[in-house]
Structures are given as C-alpha cells and as structure tokens.
Image (cartoon, rainbow, N blue to C red; front, side, top):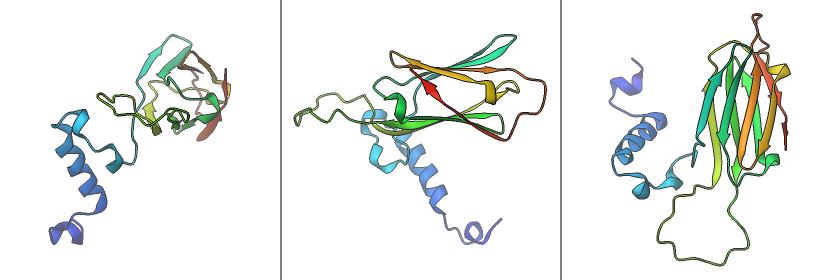
Length: 148
C-alpha cells in the first residue's frame, strides 16, 4: 500500500476511474465527454483463420491519413482522429451520437503475428488489418501503413 492509499488520498488515475464509474450508470447522453481523455472507441471485430488474424474497425468519417496503426508486444494499437465537418453552420442538436476527436483501441492479439508483413486497407469507412500468424517471436514494435 502506498502513502496516498494509507492517508486516504486518491491520485488522478483513481479519480478518473471513479468518475467513469459514476457516469457509466447515467447513460451516454449525460456523460460529459470533454472530461475524458479519449472521446470515443471505434467498434472492432477480431477474427482469425489458420493463417492470419483479421481486425476490422468501423472508422466512418476518418481520413486514412489520420489513422495510425502499430503493434507493440503482440498488442494492436489503432489511433487517430475524426474531425467534425468544418463547413457546417452552427446547429441546435436534438440528438448527438456521433463522436469526434481522438480515438484509440488497444487490442490484444489472440496469436503471435508477423506485424512486419501486415497489410491494412481502408474502404468505405472500414479499416481491415490482416496480420499473418507466426511461430517465431515477433519484433517488439512495428508501424503499419494504411492504403486506401
């Protein structure tokens, strides 16, 4: 137990977790997104065949150049930003469900992969990453380029 816990003091990470738990029961529309570091997490599917692991992410409205993919210690990281449309006039929202801003997904891979041979394609808002499986120990960190 550290000194903060002994004295009953919470650190910034503890406070963030407690706030997230508090707002979790209120429902998404009441959650103050500005409070949280990451505004949204894209939905993802992870599947595998005998030869590869396939990850598909729903990134509608994100430009390919705003997507960063990396594998570090057999964990896939998908990061980027979705920007709000700039030319829209000021609006009075009645429903607001589309999240904008930075995003990050951290996906533990179900098998060892050769990230150096990975391929990523982006088409109609879906990012598909194909990571060939390998039996050997993968390198610690690999960046993956996205092609449209």
